Image (cartoon, rainbow, N blue to C red):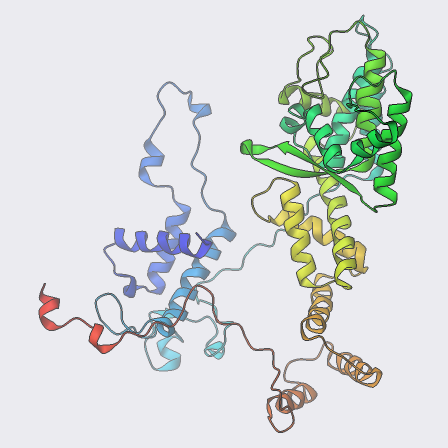
Length: 489
């Protein structure tokens, strides 16, 4: 369901608990609803889980201030718009106006009042009891290239660490590649632990890299067991190089079993693929003679047991790299790096395909980044990664200016506008004159009047205000109204 539907369900339940019909809403009830949101129900305050210490009893998480104010805004909008959507309630009673100015100022009584009566006919109406929402200025931090390099070095360089088997270099390479899978493919710790060699080989076959190598060699090959076969290794690396340069491909898509046992196609950077097969497979096979390892299953295995590493072990290894590098972060920090790089790559590709940067392109980038990271929907954090990519692409740091810029480009794309140089200069001058001017500026008023005049603007191309979401006009025919006999039933 939409967030609005969840909020209204809560609101109607609140009214029912107070013995009120939804048409009896008022400022007082909305204030009580706010207080109700801040107070846990009695059963949560008294209920205890038997056998669980008090320190570990899970407390009920109450909505934050901004979340409560958003709910009240949705309730307010519902009562503001509902009279235009339905004419009669379920009791066949006419639905009147709920929202208006205070009685002392407007002469009429409205159960839900406005904060500023001057906005009585505007879509910017605000409930009289609304409180300002706290702005969250915290932005997700992205590791610098230098910090990532320090973590890589701490994981790969195991100088001074001995394990009695002489496997320090192999373990260092393995740990570095696990971190690289987070920055170069955005894998979670559990996905790194479950990464299969067969998934990598299948991806390279699907992209034609191994098939091209087999045509060069004139024989069938596999990724594993090539530590002594220099010709096969060279053929695969040459084919991978051709894939990146001649086909202009930046990623190899690998099937990964992700969160919730969902299979998704993940873009692996070509450089990561190259290091995985050369360092993670061939050099490991050549160096680990006498060590019990199976190269047919999970890619990252324990050099002690020969079995796959667990997700917990992967997380601990990555955390140790951050700790030894004196860098604040974790595996999730490395995934952020990948998200930002991926957003930039997809943005460049999509903008190149469309010829320009538009909102449609940005929506594509948001969706692609969410899919690559295994998210079911676009989150605020993903939007921030894409914002960083847009700033790099446009050079415009101010969000409002970027939105204005994109709106102009979107109009040009949608309308297939053909402008002369003189008209482009005219539009540029109008933008300069109107910048930082109010909507009531004489020139703005005059332009709006011209656009609204069918004699001067026969096409009547105007930017109309979109209709409200979630509500639609429902007319109730007279013959559908219940009769007096039906009311008695």
